Every structure is written in structure tokens, then in C-alpha cells.
Amino acid sequence: MATIEGSFTNASGLRIAIVVARFNDLVTSKLLSGCLDCLMRHGIDTSQESAQMDVVWVPGSFELPIVSQSLARSGRYQVLITLGAVIRGDTPHFDVVVSETSKGIASVSRETNVPIIFGVLTTDTIQQALERAGIKSNLGWTYALQALEMGSLMHELN
Image 1: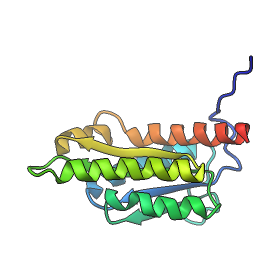
Image 2 (image 1 turned 180 degrees about the horizontal axis):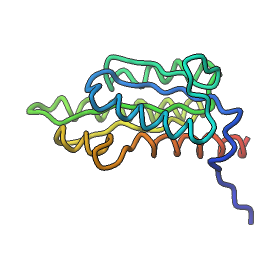
Image 3 (image 1 turned 180 degrees about the vertical axis):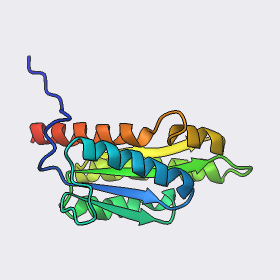
Image 4 (image 1 turned 90 degrees about the horizontal axis):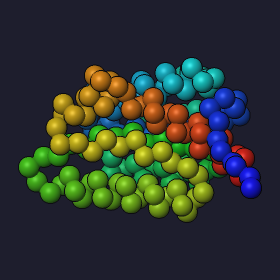
């Protein structure tokens, strides 16, 4: 029996793209900050001049799948991270955006064989979103760890 798993220490050749929704940027910018901090502490060059990673901003979470698809198909990246925040309002718009965003991202990942970390917060209140983006803990850090593990795991499998 073989056990195959990813690691957090072998990220030297990993190319990462982070796709961030600008809508609710009070939340998403905090997720991005946590994500970048984790990647930097694990050896990823997060500088503006980095050839190892790119950050792409989109208008909202609904646009995450199409841009992720373009990036995944480019062949430049071994893993993508999507960051967004969809906060429930008084209309069914929340349900539509969450459903289509999650299905779209999952579909792109399966079609391209590029792992895409689903870092889209879906909360009932802005307070819940802020708690997950840094007040209590920053899930951006967790999403970055998932990206490192999946990038490493896919490298091992290939």
C-alpha cells in the first residue's frame, strides 16, 4: 500500500494564481492578506515582481469561474486560489451567486485538472464574514495551505 500526500515544504517551483473578487473588498482584501502572508512564510515569492505568483482582481464572486478557467487553461499555474465573500441579503440573489460560483469553480477544476481552492465565504452577516477574514482567524491562511498541499500532491501524482 502506498500513501501519497502533499507537503507544505516543497513549494519552490509552484506557480500560483489568486483570483480575488472586488465586491465586499473589505473582506476579500483581508483574505488576500492572510493568504499572501502564509505563502510568503512557506517560501513563495509574493513580491510585485514575482514570477512565481499572480493576483488577479475580478468584479465579484460570479466572475471567479471564467477568469479561473482562463488562468487554468494557460498552463502557467499549478494551483489557483479563489477569494470572495457573498453575504446574504433580503433577496434570493445570494443563492444564485453562491450556487453558480461554486459549481463553476468545481467544473473548471475538473475540466482543466488544475486544483482550485474555493475560498469564497458564504455568510449570513458582514460580522460573520469579518470574523472569518481576520477578526477571529483569517481563512486566507488556510486557503493558502490548501493550495500548497494540493499543488504538491498533484506534482506527486503526475
